[in-house]
Length: 401
Ligand code: FEO
Image 1 (cartoon, rainbow, N blue to C red):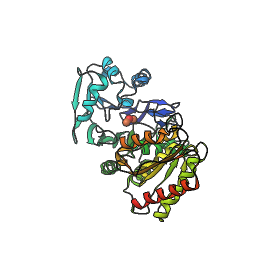
Image 2 (image 1 turned 120 degrees about the vertical axis):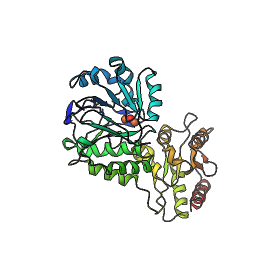
Image 3 (image 1 turned 180 degrees about the vertical axis):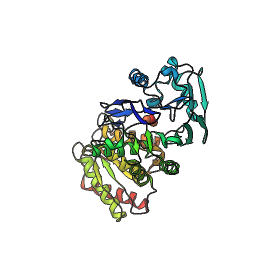
Image 4 (image 1 turned 90 degrees about the vertical axis):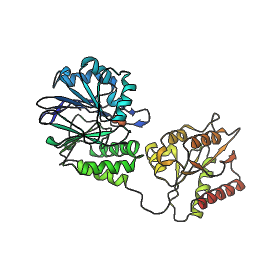
């Protein structure tokens, strides 16, 4: 986000990172991202809302200097202390040792570990506290688990502007600040959904609470920490509607039991198909699809797994282990909501077949509910093996009734 005025006395001073392709190790960002930050100037005091990633601090400082001298900033508001927003705090404090940092109770604890400093002015704020900048009042709204325990929103009533940090954001970068200038809306939609799934998917109840907080405000601008500023006449309502849709409790309906697998020579695939048949036989109304993991986008597979009622996952053994796409899928598990999720393991192997034991240990670490021991076959499944695979799937299906 380039330096740009949002409304009277409020500027965006964050930075653009259009070339980023992986965020936080596990999130692909095909459309880059932005690290948004905002300066709010009242008649008496100046506040900076969010800091930035340490790697981009020098460019960020240039952006701030385009609006004011960094030493003139009175407050740094940290709605959330993840290092993509708080990584530069220690350097900012070196430049402005008089800066008072404002965070929630949880944020204040994390901040000490992120800055490795305790010798700075730190104010803990709670729900409803406020700071008067002179004609602009910053009011803090608690928003826990959106998406860290420390998260909060900052509301400037005079300008009907709310700062939501990650909430409602997107890893999406165009050289424009406002949502009504998005040039590639289809690309934005993909980035917006992927971001929601990865960051807020684990916290649907908290998302619903966060939306209620925002609906009670008369918002003109929602200034997120990634992606475009959302506006009343632009995408704000739509964005909130999509969050409401995605976070809604699942309606009662047919069970969803996907069967994921990888297969080098078709043997584990044969098991997958038979296990799926068995599950369907036990649960005729269930949605039981098989997915070869190398043929589908990983983000889509992760969303399917996380939204499932139960699932099966199979891998051959290569180099004494399960194969990489299977590990990748399990690295995207929403561990909060998948605890106790019923699962079965299966796979073909040639020599010693370590994949099953390694995956079993991983699923136990995720506190999932493993049904029976993994179903394993040496090399090519025989007709008898396939019959047993179908029976295995049927027993699993019956256990889900
Ligand atoms: Fe963009 Fe959770 O930090």
